[in-house]
Image 1 (cartoon, each protein chain N blue to C red):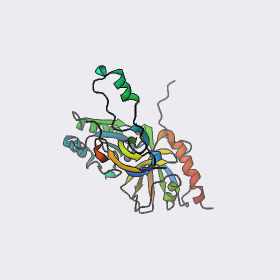
Image 2: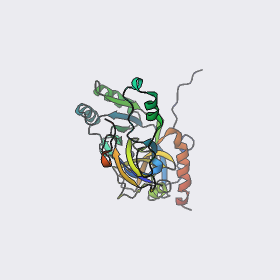
Image 3: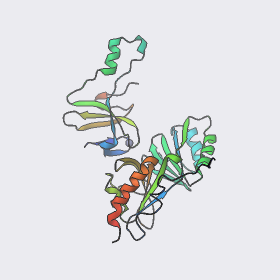
Image 4: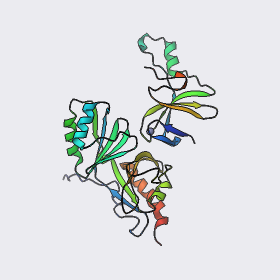
Length: 96
Length: 198
Ligand SMILES: [Zn+2]
């Protein structure tokens, strides 16, 4: 089991959290003016990397806040945890 | 033909008798019918903070996983913009009215959740050991002291756990969902059997 460091509550067991997929996906600001291809890309296409992955987690059984995690998909090692709106390693962040 | 509505603890029948007697090192009890209000608002807004502090007689706990006691009212940190206010029985709806009035015109949310949750009390020298059977948090007083609280999993259910400062030994309060109260009570009672005097 992973131990995840909630940016509010501190380290807790993985069972307290729920997974929310890849982080930093930007919703097209004007869906009506967005091509079907770009919309499908926003909805369905994910990077699915082997290695370092920025992803969203929610402390579902704790403070119920969403936050970002950078996790290695091979070793499962968690490299960084940062709040929504916060700055991740390498400058990754949520859309403004 | 109509009967007047009657409130009933979710542990009616199960929880009316303490499962483990006074001589045991773990005791279970319920504190039913307390007023419970869920408050949300922005602590960066001085008008919100001032209004709430004025009504409650003291500040909201802003440190994660801490509790503030103001008179008979206990306030639990639930999130950076969310708190649970627990009042003695019968005082919840009055406090809600006063808070609502004080917060008029300010961005906030206030919900009465009294009937959706109840409180289980686990006390006695072995209270921590009993809870540790089904909770992975470190409950040693060094790591989890009076004044701290935690929303976590106990036997697979979400609970709001806190330790009370009692001279007579450890005492934990568990605020639990109404629909999980019966299950959790039975789990705890089962786990407490080994602490019962022979
Ligand atoms: Zn948390």
